[in-house]
Length: 349
Image (tube, one colour):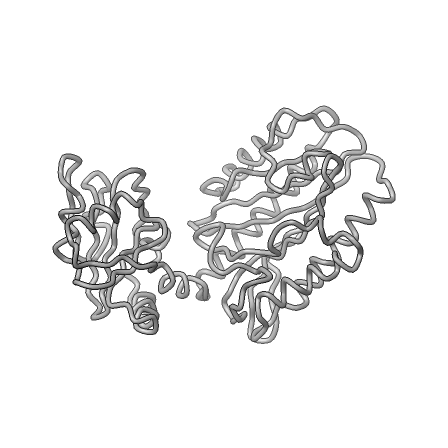
């Protein structure tokens, strides 16, 4: 149990007038209790009350007994798992984690009509948003290893290799270097496939003149990395070079805007303006970035509608892109950590 983190969550609950929340996201349970559990279809619930009372509810198969130092209520596969939780929930509003399956919320409401579920992820998300020194150290190492893997797969690009082959190579090298695995399915995109921001890598073969997007990340001691690099295989056309230079300039502008006190939407604007001014605004089709930590996508967004203020300890991506349908795409992504007077770029290469 991490008392400092729990106290911060309780402080956040009070600020949002929540007497109780149910935490179910495996990363959030780990963040507070130190035990990682993937429940799949079974119920995992950490009930946090404003008076500091914590109780964890989980299937006996999760082997949580002895792994956590808070009260644990276990149930069997043949038990009504919600019946184990329901009596302990206070009447009135209960904050529900956005990852908790609706079947459990509905069953809780059926058993406790005096309980009103409300959105309740934010107290934990706000706490997780600010990384401690130990978390930042793990994220630096995760990014360092990610750069190593990316450099090696870049050297493996050759005519005729498929996207799937490079994807598999990334996963293999990441494991060789000690990673727990990829933080998401690697996105390897050749040629016109790069015009799809989340192209599902397939059997497309690399050909001369292709622009190559490699969006990759790994997990190191539970903490994620994420980086995108765009390369050119063979001869570069003037337009391919121009588009790359615009996206790279947008990436640099976004990073230059990262410092304490700046709104996330203003960081988005700094990157987006470069692309708009170059005439490619309609082809930048996603937010500039996202938070990252125990999950590869965390609160907050770096987007045009985010009023979150950058604070020391926040880690998020800066990843502008231009995507020309049927032709090619370019994306350049780095992770930044907000410091006391600016930011630290965690990704190299």
